[in-house]
Image (cartoon, rainbow, N blue to C red; front, side, top):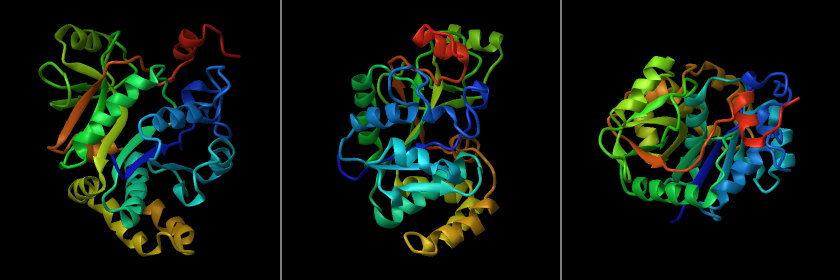
Length: 286
């Protein structure tokens, strides 16, 4: 596979893990698993197994650039994108994808959080390569669904009708449920945890954003002439805060008619709670 791009979203503050994770030093830049690697380093290394020739991009807060430089020194400076302020994931993704498409119009793109736990990197890589193969020649968005092991109330769910063996059409996205509803999902089957990983080609995501998030696209179009120039930072400071503050789930995923899911039949956690981390490490966090 050629022209693969991996976009790592790393601007969050990990507020549910305070005071271990703080706005000054959030969880993605900490060795929470006590393994000698921070969460973003583990993410980067996991995606290298998907395609070692992929181009990596990180979208983060301007105040975290030094962490990226220290922890991921192989990523070129022009591929580290600094948001002037947080505007949720739709503007974050639009900025990255506009920048990628300007220079790499045939790009096939994975967008991923920076802070998940996936111990089986080889199985993960096989899943992601299959998703990339699906989006390379189609107008399609593929998200990753994790087979639930419990009626978890801290995750959003994806409903994909029928047995998910390979890529299947998404029926519906569900918000984080109550315990009773989560138990119903597991009993019914066909429901998966939403891992927040998205795969698409550059043309597809631009077209989908133009249909479903035109305000954000207008901002990106105004920014576009400055991309890769000395004016980019100044123009980004001026324009990015005017983007609608909305997640990619609300802006596109729940509205598009071309969303598919690939099941991730491997262990996964978003490490969003002290209990989740302690279950993996067997140690109490200080």
